[in-house]
Image (tube, rainbow, N blue to C red):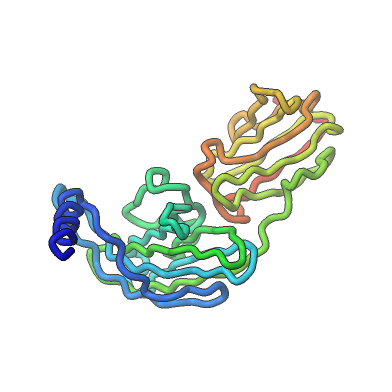
Length: 265
């Protein structure tokens, strides 16, 4: 058995992989922890192997949770990333910056400096689960110096818009706060022109479907942001690739839809 483990370690090292470290502790919802992260190690080819700590997030009730990490030591020089995994070890979300997160590492490239919308050097992501479910948070330090990081898990109420309600006049503010989220609106009784207003890091689109079998919906985005709503029955707002999400904040995941009689430009 020892020989097999040694062979496994050699194989992982050759592939520039590593076995996940043991769980450092629990991060219950409503509480906080301080993670001591070792420095990253430079590997062959200039690759960095991050210093890592893993925390267990047990859910005691259904709902949404925001997980945040803020460097207490390196602060603006920090290079942090959060990776959220389910009980099977499948990646659910990866932090990118203070204002958005992605579905997998490829959509969330590391930057040389945190790119938050505030001076806070932290990173965040959201999760949604049920009571009894357990998630694992992998906290990664890509800086070449050790760091101390404040972690928190906070329950919150998601933006209630986009649950299939009728939208026939005026304006509405919604938000894409979870990976793979669809916001849906019934626009069968709407008239005039629909406008999408959004400024943020998501590739946000609003899709106007004429019916359940409509394979080619009209697509609005922050550039082509206006279209007549006539004949449409369903409006869906989502990230185009279902790979990014943000928070219910301006410059993040929040968007505005409006209906008016003013024609499109």
